[in-house]
Amino acid sequence: MEFIKLNKAYAEHVALIELNRPKELNALNLQLMGELRDALQELDKTDEVRVIIVTGNERAFAAGADIKQMADNNAIDMLMIDQFSTWDQIRKTKKPVIAAVSGFALGGGCELAMTCDMIIASETAKFGQPEIKIGVTPGAGGTQRLTKAIGKARAMEMVLTGKFISAEEALSFGLINKVVPVEMYLQEALKLALEIASMSPVAVQLAKESVNRSFETHLDEGLHFERKNFYLTFASEDQTEGMNAFVEKRKANYKGK
Ligand code: CAA
Picture 1 (cartoon, helix red, strand yellow):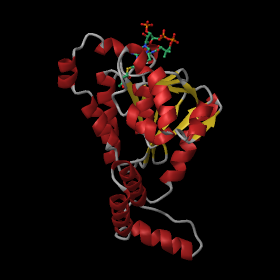
Picture 2 (tube, rainbow, N blue to C red):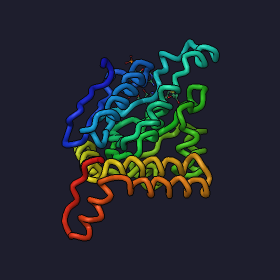
Picture 3 (cartoon, protein in one colour):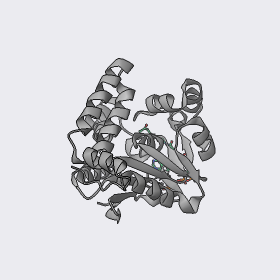
Picture 4 (tube, rainbow, N blue to C red):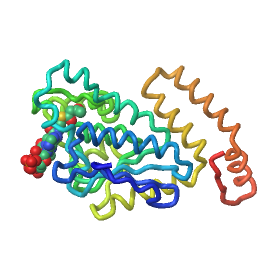
């Protein structure tokens, strides 16, 4: 791994992935995205890991897809390179992924944060889809996820002007979960990760799948999907443990079975 750092045992049941191209503000070149995909797939298969944090550094989460790598491509090059198939695989990560964002989260960087399940940001974070300024449009979900998260009017303004929004604005628009001082954003992401890691991994995985389904389907089908996953949790030992622990007024000890 050249462009990411992977710590499988960052904390109990929590893994950390750091994007690591600091000089290029973590611009997302093809190799970095491939490494990220491989790491997430590996963590999905690692029983010990229940929650994954993806972060950058204080200056940049990621300043977008690597413009220098794409600049000379034509449409057919882009079609054949098919960079977004890697993003599709990342989107299929089964375990919860928390983005811990400081500094720039722009273009593909904003899209990557939105591909994660939750976003914890530092006060210095800046979110934006500035592709319009370089003569292109967002390509990794920016027009879709941003619009669903913050509504048409705000998304349209961001996408058509390329202007950045602050972490506070992102919070008030419903794009992110929490804003904290810069020295605490990773700590805060870990706190959230540990809370989720204390739940039944079976139920967490099914719940994530059900929430995501709401983006991809109409209400009737989504409710049907949710109901089946709810019933499926009753096939797990964790369901028995969780409900018994409630009845017996003790803390549940989940095994992921
Ligand atoms: N691709 C490639 N290199 C990038 C980059 C990117 N997206 N963003 C920054 N860099 C590089 C810069 O070229 C520079 O490299 P050199 O030192 O070799 O010149 C280095 O990172 C530091 O950047 P700056 O000197 O520009 O730093 P700054 O503080 O003055 O500005 C910034 C920071 C506002 C983020 C500015 O770098 C910028 O506007 N970056 C581009 C943002 C952008 O347009 N992102 C969208 C990309 S397209 C996309 O993402 C498509 C998609 O949907 C997938």
